[in-house]
Length: 273
Image 1 (cartoon, rainbow, N blue to C red):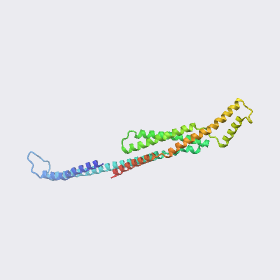
Image 2: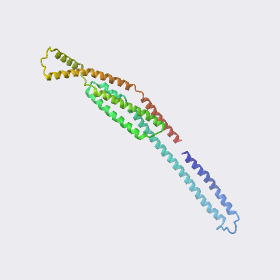
Image 3: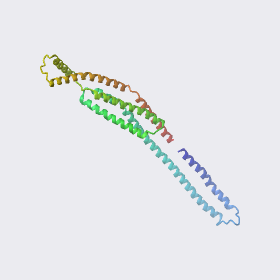
């Protein structure tokens, strides 16, 4: 924009002296004694009248042109400012949504409903959806900014990509634990199973030693063993949840987003000067 202002000033600096000086030069030319070989049609006052009208038209046209040129430059600058303001609003919304999406609690929520079958299934579906959303966001960002070399963008890209990668890894780890987690057995049911197996082993009341009964009792034993397996897996899930809750790299993403927005605001402020 500064270069365009310099061009306008240069044009005015050249045109104004030329327009002012031309009538003076013509007056001097017309009052000079011309050689016999140089014929001038009409008298000096006729030429002065003609050139007065001619120069007046040039001045009016020049002023109109300068005003038009300044208006065009002004409108173009305003258009660029409006475009940059809209881009800044979009960027702020996009970065705000991306940072807000990095919600690690969505992974650990499943720990709160381990013993509620319906809600547990619900959280698993949410976890799958969350995984897909993160993949989409990550891919869309790479598509738009993958080749950017601007420092403020690469800084955000680095921290954001690392955070997304860790999130996806945590989700996968949690899903592995979920896939291995045996069904929940209440304390009351566990007690009944243990008593049944104990009574069967002691032969105190059981007389049925058929294959079907043996298979049934084996099933009870497996369920009893699954209780300790479940407790062990839940313990590992708890450790993963602790690691997730102590995750700190999201602060770097937030800081990088603020620096990016700040740089764009400063660029807009410079454009408005």
